[in-house]
Image (cartoon, rainbow, N blue to C red; front, side, top):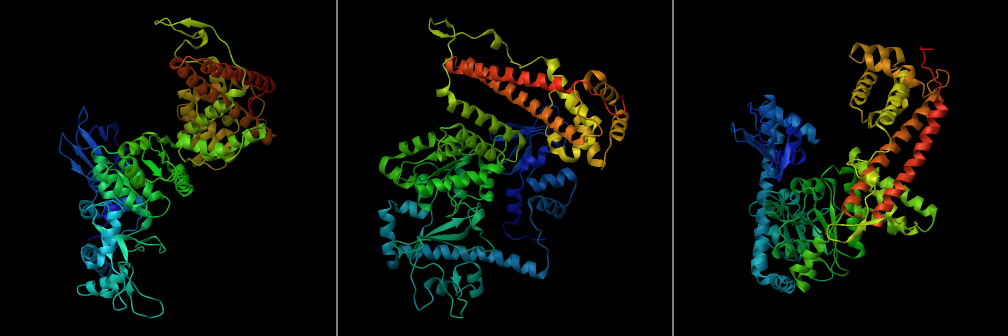
Length: 625
């Protein structure tokens, strides 16, 4: 069957080709492509490549080639329609059905593209004619020469003529009026009056889809009229929240190595492209949407948002940051460049040249840095209460990130930034110095950090803490009724214990009202007999008394306390390792003070753990008295 124009493209955009292939093939990213062993023939060295930007896979060994639809067809032995239906379901799209009405709609959409192309030609001709004199003067004042006008297909929408508009009169020669209305070129009043041109007396900017076809327009007034910019309404071809102005040009630019830059307006995009920044795009007068962000990430893992330095521009950047947070993943983020006050890319390039614009882009900050700076600037932190408030706000922003691993990384980042903010209030820590090979003095690396990895306790103590958490769930699986997510996201460094944890989760998911006997029976029958016996033995369970059958709440609170202590231990270990790495790179008093502070905190936590172990000694497992 024939699908509407853009439907298959929408599937290709929404469904990531590397994600689909990566479900069965181990892909390794190399530059702009991924490589792996071909799933269509046996090979020992990888000859299979995936190009996400261009949306295709290719095997240099067997010649297999195609897009995401072709891959699903070949890998799952599906027909074209079956593959489209499967991928459309993943993309959240409804597959159009081949009814007579649908065939008519497909034909109409195809014709709408022809309508928009005819309108673009009309606007270009009007700009060149007598009626376009004022528009040409405006574009000349903005520094656009003939080559730029032709390259970006700029035009002019004349004012009313005969009460209806010249565009309508021109297009009615070939297309019916209802099609002009559906294309958003002509507007029909609700009161029954005749339809009229939607755009009047404006400089016109064609808006193209990713394939370079005209799907909408943006019109700018040349005087003080309102609104300053007017975009086409949503149509079967155009959805404002899904389209970026300049995307088709930027795709070509990024493929050649250009930096992907998101700015605010049509003129900014044009100015950047003319100055050689060929990866420039802009949203259409609104904050970046989730769909637009996904478009950007398909081109590059870290696009740069470069909005105006005024309050409105910074609000736009802030809204983009808020939209992006839940969507962030490892290797997928944003950078933020701030223009000088009162400048936009068009004016900055015009006044100071390309180097000034490049300096702005080179100074772009990572999203995490910008987020911390925003929250830090929101309120003073000159009291303990206000510092605690900042920590609370930062944690709330981190929890907006759906990716669990990245969420933890943001929490660690914010902890380190908070430490740096409090550093001026801390006492200076002196340390011995030694001469390096060049005869210069530098802080001496202490013995405690001279190894490759710094731990906060022996491996035996670390393992016992993990055993305790799993043992309590073995004895009281009803803990999972309220805390299965905490158990599912628990980080266990011992592989055997982590494997046991995953099996417990599988059993719990398949059995409602799971009791200890049922759980232990399942585990012993599935190869975990020694693990169960060890964890429920006296050597482990002697460290807790929280699983008493008569006191479920005490059990729950004790398990949560043990979990908190373990997470705190992991956090401190990672922070300390990061501090050691930093000390090795920058052996300064400040970096040594960071290590000292973390060691002091670790000593406090060891004391708390000892107190916890002492308070919980003497417990005996239910059913094993």
